[in-house]
Image 1: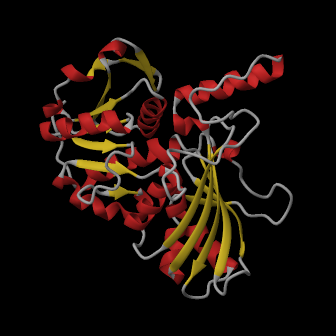
Image 2: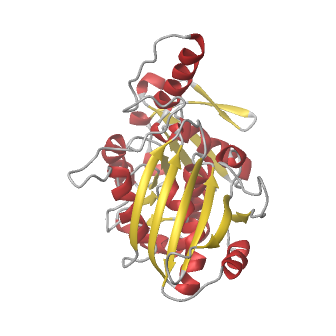
Length: 341
């Protein structure tokens, strides 16, 4: 008896990272299948020291699959997730397609893994936005201690969150600037090389972007519907790795020292906070790691009970792939019976 696990979208950046994490964690009794569109059938992808040949998603028998990771864009995920779930595989979707669906658990493993008890309603589990996941991992222990009432967050999100085309665009623009060629733009709304863009997603009539709105709604769904949240989401000229400046207001008093004590013990976090030059973690240092790093924890004197902090993590690894794999591990341990490979 073994688990059959499919990675749908295995040729993409998130799909490849899911394969990397699965290989590194060496889950017992698992057969991993790489799936993609018919055009990518036969393409080889890395799986630890081995390689897997991609199979056609349309030809795969999901009735014999326990879990299917979806590393697809939201539109394609909406098409395939219900089909796969109906066939019997539990879908773990990394896109935004089902995050706000009230019938679908939206999971940050360190925060609300208990909500996986409701997975069977649609046989779909949504992985939270990477920026939301790192924020909630840090804020949950503080919320339990002093109850958060308001958060003001500015996210600094890498181009990998916008996909391979955005990563290629950053590379091409950087090279063009160095050699004096014309800078061309297609994947992002403005030049990204040597620049920052305060827009991720479409801008609505109120002036908020879809990324900012969805982050606020996801955070309320997972943490507390009464928390007030203001987000400014910024795209940065970084290939991989997200960061966030977060200002938090509490109902009850909490000192920076107490907060650091709680954060030091919280799952999935590493506190690096030295009061000296460079005594914090930046996105480039977080790349390749599983943890969310917390730094620069300090008092916010502008409100009676306030703290400010800095977060950094690998958005592909921790923000998407590891969270998805942790969800699968919990499902296999507590909620599913093995299916024959």
